[in-house]
Amino acid sequence: MTWMEISVVSIAAAFLVLAGFAIRVLIAAKQLLHQLSLTAARTEQHVAKTAGQAEQLLKQAGQLTEEVHMQVLALEPGVQSIEKAGAAIGDVASVLRKGARMMNDSLHGAEKVVHTHQKRIQDVMEWATTGYELWQRWQASRNAKSDH
Picture 1 (cartoon, rainbow, N blue to C red):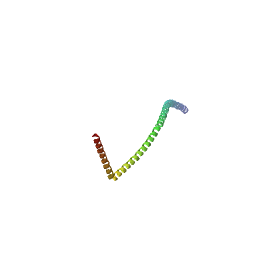
Picture 2: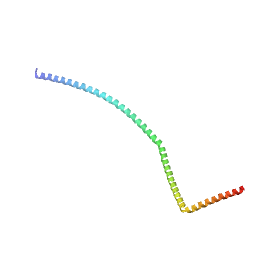
Picture 3: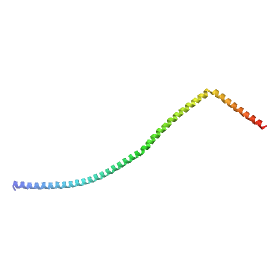
């Protein structure tokens, strides 16, 4: 065999080896693409499922927000009533404080008057007691005269 024939046979053998290697690479690439396709399909299913769950959660959150808003609106008149009641209680407490202060001032004034006029009050009490005793004696003597 000549160099030319050996070269042709070597080239043919190299071509066959290269073709075999290329076929094996293409088969591996086809399998890899098939696996990527399956993975992409599964990922798409998971994404769709997750999107559905997220949509459901968003609906529930929206409903919950609406319910909380309605409850806050329902509580608002009660809170306003409590505020008004608190203000009324504050007004009543203020009036009671003023009344207690006025009563205390009146009692102190009466106490001063009694203390200042104690002697006169004692005299009046003695005169009233004496007058009552005289009236009782007079009634007793009158009753005694009418019995005879």
